[in-house]
Length: 142
Ligand code: THU
Image (cartoon, rainbow, N blue to C red; front, side, top):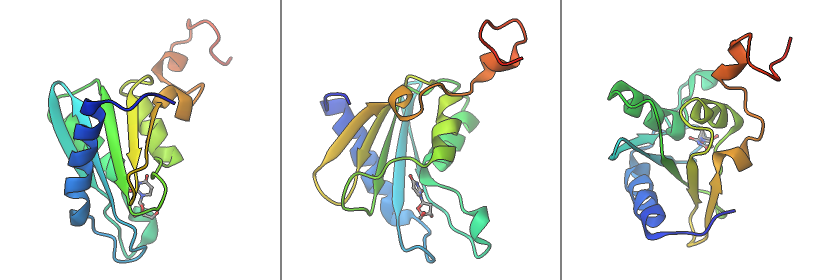
């Protein structure tokens, strides 16, 4: 757990700002996300689909926008969901985020003023990252 800062709240405001654009007719659970990378903000929302498995989470939408703009390292992500308590990123999103900085700051909010701040390492310890694909990497699986 980390202390909440003013930049955290500013990033969370971007996530909250975009949340109304979520396309969530099936779950009716809207999520907005804002990534801070390369000094810029990239927003995303969850986009659901009639074929439920084709749904994309807000966090991954924001990451795709940042990567498409040329970013390869993400400093922080804010997530704002419709839940009472702060909305945490799903397991798949944690894995996707780890690709672009396993130590990034993750700011989470819900419908109330409660805000949770953690590092991605806290949310996804021992992440599988590209180093494991290097056969000379010490500690990598055989
Ligand atoms: N969802 C996100 O966008 N991010 C999360 O962190 C949790 C879940 C979306 C996926 C789906 O559209 C809806 O929330 C319900 O699972």
